Length: 470
Image 1: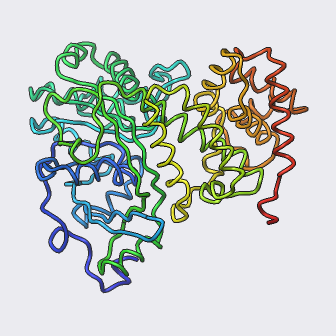
Image 2: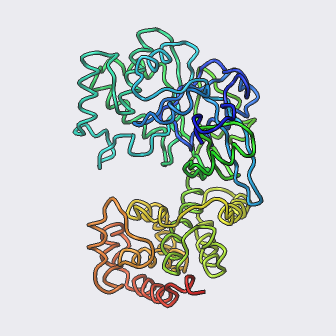
Image 3: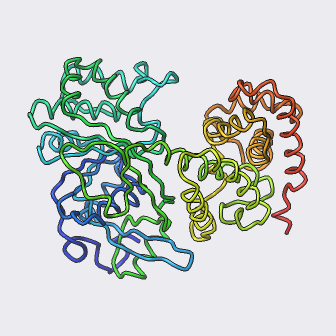
């Protein structure tokens, strides 16, 4: 619903929400997830009035164009199973397009700015296959050349933007700052630090000493399912709240944020708004990767063979739920968090998966299995084989992925599609061996494992399409 087609008042700070807080956090990559997650936690911190966020978009300026006329305000729609709740979020004090280099450098020069946060996805880290900065990427090369010529030059890649910001902050003499990546990948703090430092070395090697003295690199684990915004959300806000919001955000009730690291210039009191502050994020990353993401991948391949389309549909099927529980039994045994934590997390996942009002498509989850199966499923399978066991949970997930690559269930969409589809040719036994050569060669040779995968594949094929027929 647009301003041109409604007589409702526009959402602004004049008629809704609190005054904008002074900017102390700069965020790169503003999107729906950030607005349902970090901005929401900051809104609920008791010192929110002192911690405004200046957010910059990704490549597209759409979010800035939608939110700027609303003074950065937007409505968070929490989709509970029984209905929606609506909340105006005011923690975004300013929203800029990515191209506004002058604004970004201005914030980095300001002594009040204490934190840089990011949600730019793993691709935004600009890493090559070896895990290091992709210096051969044309965009990276252009940015390096631009910053060498002019430290205030506009840049397009995230590592280069941060290096440009650090150059400006060093020149201004405004001191310490923390960097907190909020991207959904393990060890995001050390990973982002690596590419930024490598780019800085190419631009100005003397910046390294300043970064060592002034920059703290924190790490976080993030979790909240946040779908895209459609006209249905805009219409729901208008009907329920009586104002026009160009960019509301739908999300699920569950949210988790685990943070580790130092913040030398301060941070919001996030722990009082539900953030878990720890010394080591790894156990929480592992729990999420294996329990949440692992079961997602299992359903994405196995439940789509049966004929289900969404997570909620799949988990409502007692057979699929049993498969998920079997996987959790295995994964939970190898986690570094306590048994009570695992039990509570499983219960929370069942609630989340069962919410029919969060439409999470299995076909979307199924994408890029070659990147997901090796980190979500194979580690637990590897530990079980080392112990001489061959449990159904991880074997079924592997069998379902093999069938997926052979054309069953969700369509194949994979960054390594040509490689993995070619490896999955032939019988299921041949395909299993071929796939493991690509993603888990250390698991071979293992005739017992291959035979178990074949047996689970046969069980899945016997159920193929039955959900659509019922």
